[in-house]
Image 1 (cartoon, rainbow, N blue to C red):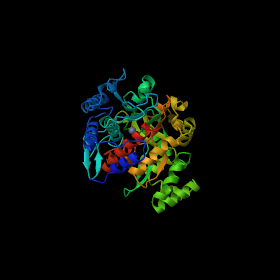
Image 2 (image 1 turned 45 degrees about the vertical axis):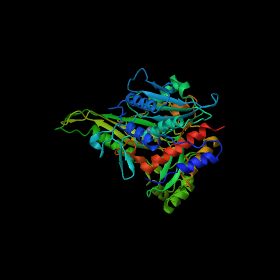
Image 3 (image 1 turned 45 degrees about the horizontal axis):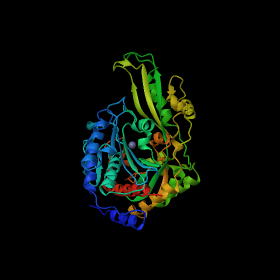
Image 4 (image 1 turned 90 degrees about the vertical axis):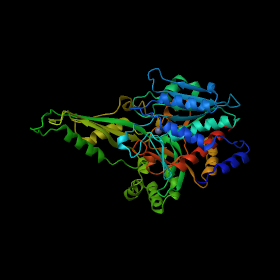
Length: 474
Ligand SMILES: [Zn+2]
């Protein structure tokens, strides 16, 4: 296989004084078995079931010797398929705030006919894992579960209790959102002084070199606009000038033409500043030029070639769904399109609605944001607590052992996570995964989702070391 950093990490944890060296545990085989079971249990909202999966995980944990009394399955009364699992390994000091490992176990729908490989079989090929959820986020879920088992198997005596919450319903769809439901109904079970979930990770360049370990310090907010237009319709043999499909096509082209400006803020500026010395000379020069002048179109064109960087530079909007017409031999009476916008922290939904309406410039096309978003009720994504030294210093130490020479930078995630649901009830939550991905981010939500085997195995070492460090922090 490849060289592992566990020995270095173990040495560091011992020499650090605060932590004992981990004793041997069930090892990589245990982790791989958990990961495989998670991927091969369909938890998509269209065809899967989260309750089936959490029951399997609970059974596996008990079989590994984990105390049954420390595991709970919690199912929202309204949704029998949306089961969640909560478990804990007790710390020595019951008054010390716990450390929570949070992961969503549901996945975006995946249809076999579209995929090159079966999405619900874990495939390992040329150094990559393939399968729905390998990257978003069953890799991290499996690491969290394995970490809790390792603490128990090594008899870890840590200051703080370590908690695990595997929740359903993060992806939009049919499930009840488990993180929000637990936060509102069972906060005591998941309460913690620090909670970690997906978001952040690590960036690889095209050659596979590690650019930076990233910590999610802010998220973008997702708003789904619905555009709608109608026309009188009629027999398709007698075309009219007013056709709802043509009208919508024009409206969509106008949305596409809107130039969203490059905008630096307190979250994306430190990220670009931090990675500039680590990328190619041409990219580094373009990033520096853009930081100096966000209106530099030539520099922007270079930086925006990377789809992750493009997303981080500003608010974006793209069409994701379209439906229209009612018969192949009829002129359309109604067309609906969804425009998914990802807003930088602080961007006002009503202002974006107004500018989109103006850009479309057609009163026969209605533009509607969800009422709560339009009212500002869901815009809390910049509320992630500041990244403090108590969060960052242990992280830098563990990262230096597992990823020597790779800088740690804070970043603004291009998507949203469940962190806001916990932050809303006072549980500080950040995105940290140690999982390195290329600029396609493993094509999460898309076809042939993948993640590097090495990335997962090193992430396992990193997160295990990090959770131990936080659990023993003063
Ligand atoms: Zn996710």
